[in-house]
Image (cartoon, rainbow, N blue to C red; front, side, top):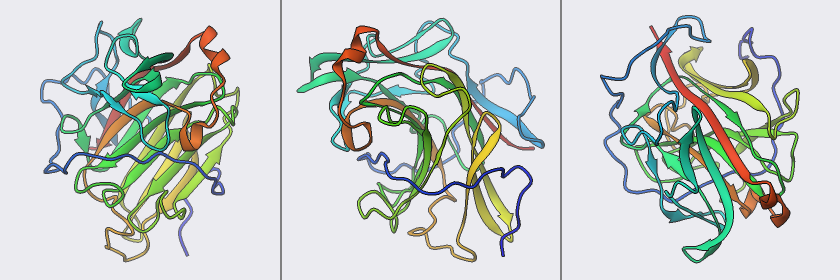
Length: 289
């Protein structure tokens, strides 16, 4: 029997919906944290951890040492074109801003933004969190997630720290995808959570605690919202098969705002009258001392 952990307050049941995407060829998966990145404080949310990297989005443009803003179409039946234009991806007032717009570009009727840290910031194990404000409206699909560097999807593994569908405005969800269990075969693991105070237009901190050999020699992944553990998954005991558990290699970060698609659903164009904007105050990464 698995041991319980003090901060696991609520283990949630599975729900549907996720994002998967085509990737470039895998890189070498080495740890990439810039040596010059300052560590302004070590007041880690998790005892025994120290901050090793972060982006506070305090400048006037996206830091390309850390992030790549993509120019591509979305997968998963999404209806937007991802653009690196400042109309879609920008830094202002101390936040990353990703804005979806109703406009034609790249053969799509909508535009939005997606950034990733591939080959720039990638890590193995630790605690990562982002303080985010999600957009309002039917058809929106914001996400904060990670992909493995060792292969292509789904063999590389996918960790969805936070996803939100405008079709379910009070909930966020978490998910894990592997070669054996993923969106394509409908067998992936997921969990839903309803934060206090609402989701859309409200600041929350979404986080992942990714621990090596944390339980009887097996890895453990804990999802958190505002410091509350909302779901947990364990490595199958004694199983080293990457088809079942690819979460022991390097991963990189993705932040995006999709429109429509498998999880976003039907888009209500009236939402663009007030603007469709996701904001990220910061992304911070901690690892064990």
